Length: 278
Length: 289
Image 1: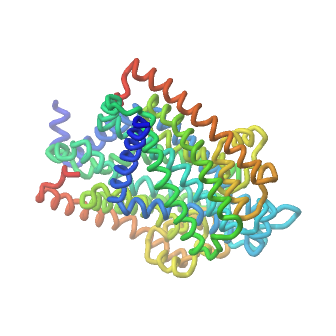
Image 2: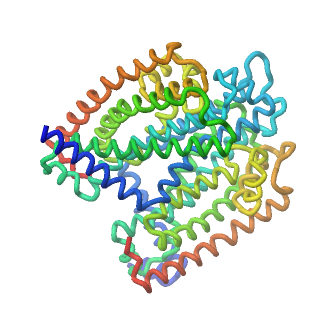
């Protein structure tokens, strides 16, 4: 019990330290709120201009909802959560490598998984808060009701989806440890993620193989769950609890796979050039 | 030895030699990270695919509905593709110079660089030279991909388009210098400001959509920014001036605004940079970060 308390305390210390640090950079927080709004604004404005008066009808025929503004805003807000998860974890590792403190972390008496969990918790708090503010502010700017549909269910999809998402970041962290070039990898990854999760479009339009790949990806279920809960477009399996149970399955499997991958790569890197090398 | 004596006695040749050496150095550093090259190609493909699919939610009307019947975009592919190309160049030019100054600060090599007799101007421009070549290749790839996915891309007045692209780039070089000056003052906050500026450019300069889609209040801001005219003139010229284009001002006026932007902004930007640099050297903050 004492050990658990000590680990939790270390985890929370890591989270709090990062939250305190980021609170010094308000501009960065503001840009995180603006990012999803601008990101949603591009297809919204393009759609308004190119679709003409039929924009809503055509969009509804393609996606199942006439509310393309909320659809795009939800996509970009969930994407910002996903993208931030990858950026925060990858950059944390990379920065520790660059400033020469990653190896020192291996010498502390706390299990590394608790320190990583602290970073993940910090990232989740930061990205979910900014995504929620972005969604509310974006709805206000584009004049749509942000609290339509099942808000609680949408939040539940986000909460459950966060755990497999951060499980995936372990895999990603392993890639950063191995390949080193975090910036390039994160850039491709974030666009790959946004493509697969259907940031601006339903994954139903993909060819079968790409669609299968997208459905193996937890953020796809998260995005569709939030959209369906708020806009009533229809869950993949028809019922919300069936889609949520898929996310629960991801919740159980993905973190274990992520941890296993990370540990294997980490061991290999430590045996060879060492984790501090960049 | 003889050659170096000759070139050092002619300032232009010395500057060119410095520029060449710096470009080579940057190229060697870039080549050390092959994943970056592959990743940026993959990134362009994904961006193109995402925006194309997003647009198709509005362009592809099912059951015989004509989505573009009442549209005000001219050619949707032209607006998106040419906006995308210009944005890639603008964002690289705008950010790369300041980012490199910051990087030298963080590495602790900025002061050493200033102690060398090498041309500061060549040093700054060299940072972007490789990026521009690379961005050019990416733009061509992106344009081909996008036109393949969205539809035939109109390519009218290519020489005029090239002239406008060069002027727009030259103008953004100037903004890049000014931004590098700001980096010396803002230090860590510079990256955040760069991000915000990029967002602002995307929206206010109507990069991925026509200006007609912008609310009146935002369009009023577009009118006071020269890059907006660069975007408008560039895509209007390449689309062959379809009805409603250019959207902001008659083309003749936009042409001269873009030309003035391309000629004057580098001078203003570099002047601002030298002032910021002098101030930083006097206060001893050049290497502080």
